[in-house]
Image (cartoon, rainbow, N blue to C red; front, side, top):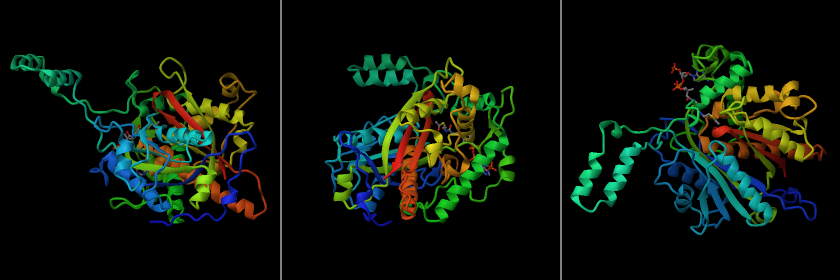
Length: 455
Ligand SMILES: CC(=O)SCCNC(=O)CCNC(=O)[C@H](O)C(C)(C)COP(=O)(O)OP(=O)(O)OC[C@H]1O[C@@H](n2cnc3c(N)ncnc32)[C@H](O)[C@@H]1OP(=O)(O)O
C-alpha cells in the first residue's frame, strides 16, 4: 500500500478571490486494477469491488474510522438488492459508519457526476470532505425475469388462499420463464452503443487505420505510465491483479489490423470498428478523495487540482443527425466559453475512449469549419487537441471501461498529472495555470465535461 501523501506545500492551494465560492480539490484517488469481464473479478460483486476501492483510499490517506462529509458513487448495472450500494460499501469499509453515502446514476458519466456534484457541495461550504466513485461489473450483471413472471411472483406474494395462488400461476406461459439479460443497447433505437458509434464513424468517414492508431497509443501510454510508477499511488492490487488486465503492451498496428470488424457490418460504409479499437466489457471500481483547502491542510494532504467547473450536454440521437456519443462536442465549447478559454489553453485533455472513433469523431467535429459555424455558432472551427496533450496516460481502450468507474479513473489520473506538471513548472519559475479538460460521453445521448486546474 502506498504511503499517505505528505503535505509538502499546503499553501499551493490557491484561494479564490474574495466573494467567489471557495475551491474544491482533488486530493488523490484509488482504484482497483480493471479486469476483463469473466476474468479475475468474475466472482466479485459491485459491493466487493467498491468496498475494496474505498478501503484502498482509506489506507492510503489514513482515513480509518474517519467520518467523511459524503460518499457518492454508483453503478450502471445494479442488482435490485443493492438499493443503496454506496452506503453498504461504506458500512463494509474502514470509514466511520457515520459517513453519509448514496448512489448516483448517469450511465458512463456516473463517476464524473459524483466528482462534480460533491465538488459543488464543497465549493458551497456544505461539505469539507467527500469521496466520489463508481463501480461496475458485467460479470455479475443482474438478470431479470420477464415482466409477466415478475407480476405473477408479486401477486403470489400477496395471495392469501390456495385458489388465489393457483389463479396467479395459471397466467404463466413457458416463454415467460426466459430470463431478461442486460444489453448495452438504447431502449429507443434498440441499437447497441457500438452500432450507434458505427453510424457516427461512417458519418464522419473515420478510417480503420486512424482508429487503430488511437488504440495502439492508448495501450503504449498506459503501459509506459505503469512502468514509470505513475500509478503506484493510484491503483491498489486486488484479487491477483496489479495492472489492468486489458492492457496489451505488446499490441501493434499489424495485430490490430488483423482483427475482424465487430460493429457496422450492415452499413453502406466500410466496417472499421473491432474488438481492438472498442472498449472491452470490464469489471472494476474507482474512488476520488475531495476536500476543501482547510480540510486538506488539517489532514496534512496536498491538494492536487481544483475542480473548477462542469458542463453537461445531450443530443437528440433518436430524431436528429448527431451521433449517440457526441454530446461532449457541444458541452465543451459552452464550458470553455464561460471561462474565456479555448482548447489551446488546455495543458491536458482526456476524452473517454468509449471507442477509438468516439475520440476521432469528437476531434473531427471540433476541427470542422462548417460544424463550428453551423452547429456551434462560432466564427470557424472550435479547435483541436494534439496527440501530445490528449489521453497522455492512455484511456479506456487500454484500461478498460467499467462504466461508472471510468470518471473516477480519469479524474484521479489527470489531477495527479496536473500536480506533477505544475510542480515542474513552478520549480522552473513559471507560475502559469495548468489546466485540464475531462470529457465523458454516455448512453442516452448524454455527455459530461469538467475543467480542472492544478492546485
Ligand atoms: C459511453 C460508452 O462508453 S459506450 C461503450 C460501452 N461499452 C461497450 O459497448 C462495450 C463494447 N465492447 C464489446 O461489446 C466487446 O468488447 C466486443 C464486441 C467489441 C468484443 O468482444 P469479444 O469478441 O468478446 O472480444 P475479445 O476480447 O474476445 O477480442 C476478440 C479478439 O480480439 C483480440 N484483441 C482485442 N484487443 C486487441 C488488441 N488491442 N490487440 C490485439 N488483439 C486484440 C483478442 O485477443 C481476441 O482474439 P482471439 O479471438 O484470437 O482470442
